[in-house]
Image 1 (cartoon, rainbow, N blue to C red):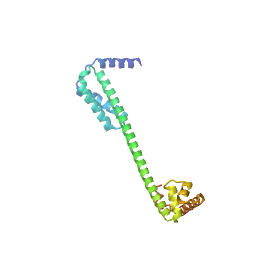
Image 2 (cartoon, helix red, strand yellow):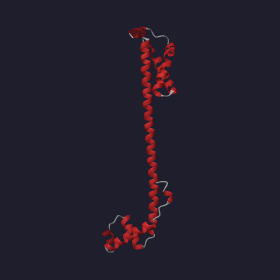
Image 3 (cartoon, one colour):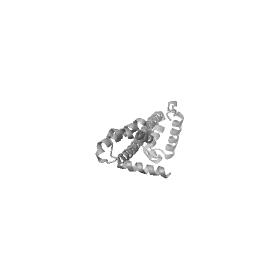
Image 4 (cartoon, rainbow, N blue to C red):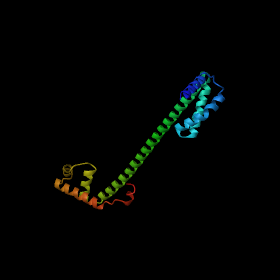
Amino acid sequence: MRNTDNLTNEKSKRLKQQKIPEFEKVFHLFNPALCFFARRLVNDSAIAQDIVTDVFVKLWQKQSDFKTVYSVKAFLYISTRNACLNHNQQVQYQTRIRETIRQQSNDIETDGMNEAIHAEVLQQVYNIVNGLPEKCKEVMLLSYTKGLDCHEIARQMRLSVHTVRNQKNRGVHLIKNRFRFREEFVPIL
């Protein structure tokens, strides 16, 4: 066990002390391992390869900053890990945005459909109200479109409150009996 530790320590010391070989050798030395490492983090070999390539471009741009192979190796692995984490965060963010847009689209579609159904029902009720007897129709319109209560309607129409209530009840009963719930609305609901 100690022999293995000693060998590892000696390798690390030698690695730290080694001068950086030319860029091509560094690329061939670390590229396969970095691609494997990145693939494990992003679960996509093409994206992993792109990330590793970008990291090597950064290394090329900064190669004068490194004095040893050890520092290059550390830079490559840390940069690859960070780039993979950034990629994963961006994918999660884009997924959340797409989900939000999809949900809002569904809400708008549902709201639009509800408005269409509401308009159809109101049109049908309005047609039924127009077919009611004249006094009943007038009471229903004053009550439901103007929002007047029975006392205000009675005063305006010069009727008793009892007569207004009877006409209103008669109107509601007639509307309920004449109203048809159209079958084409069933699949929408």
